Length: 353
Ligand SMILES: NC(=O)c1ccc[n+]([C@@H]2O[C@H](COP(=O)([O-])OP(=O)(O)OC[C@H]3O[C@@H](n4cnc5c(N)ncnc54)[C@H](O)[C@@H]3O)[C@@H](O)[C@H]2O)c1
Image 1 (cartoon, protein in one colour):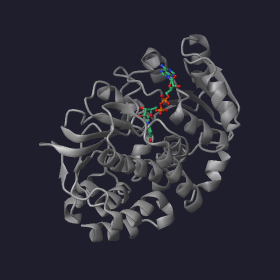
Image 2 (spheres, protein in one colour):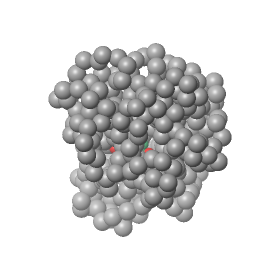
Image 3 (cartoon, rainbow, N blue to C red):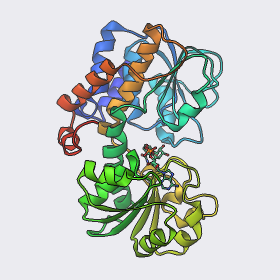
Image 4 (cartoon, rainbow, N blue to C red):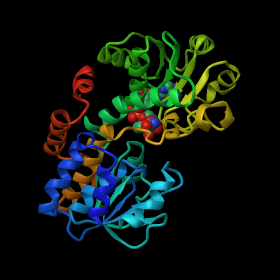
């Protein structure tokens, strides 16, 4: 299995694109820390996810990939996986030793050693878990994906959808968390005039200082100010992480001349917004791309999810939510910075924290 996967991955990506997963592949090929372990992996399946499977297979895992219609995936890659020795299921049955989950979709699948969860929102389904659950979303590593990766993905998506960001465009961003900060980062590099809408006092200001960009901050309840910004906007971006988070503005957004771009996993524009009114049918705009987030930005996150499998298998963790060990994250960050392609971007961001 590993040989076919190795060919599939290295034919597509240089090692510098995935230094952390490549390090795991090389190290685990001899140490085999997951030998014989039945692992269910529910990371959204794209070509770059094969690099994650490569490391798990090298570790000796008996890997099954879970696909779920509520998560985006590349159907050609899903179809190719069994031929590469990686079984795929849409209805996992029986018990696994470890579940590497996304969006909490497999919290009910029995797991002997426990779970690692990729998303913050998915943790809600694990709060009462009787098994150890490691959160992959809570540390510095996730910022590489969400801030730098979505910044790059947003720019590539808008270009690919026929709307490259015009210099000096007016952009309204709802939600200035990790993903919204990534969009702001991209927008600022195009000289955009940014209006940030976030209910947390000081959130937009903190992001602005951190990224070294200028933006106007407005609360979502400052209706007149929000509508003034929407009226002037080239594009309105949703990144709140909340289903229907922009619903109270659905009528005005729909009637406006602004492009509407969702970056969140949920339908943030809400049920009253016709799918055709927003780019990519209200799905995250970067998921219109064959590679929504480049492997170089996902490498450390996927490696941390894999490392959580080893941690679950080898440590006697108590039940409940926990963070991955700090030392594991530090080591993966070091490899990413020293051997990857994004050292300058990480430095531009002011480091990892
Ligand atoms: N498109 C991608 O490639 C990609 C990648 C990673 C995550 N995501 C998704 O993006 C979404 C955001 O993720 P995140 O990590 O930035 O979340 P986050 O929790 O870090 O940030 C969300 C921000 O939205 C704000 N917010 C909440 N409700 C709001 C409202 N009604 N109006 C304005 N702001 C509001 C919050 O105060 C917070 O600052 C999630 O759905 C996540 O799954 C997408």
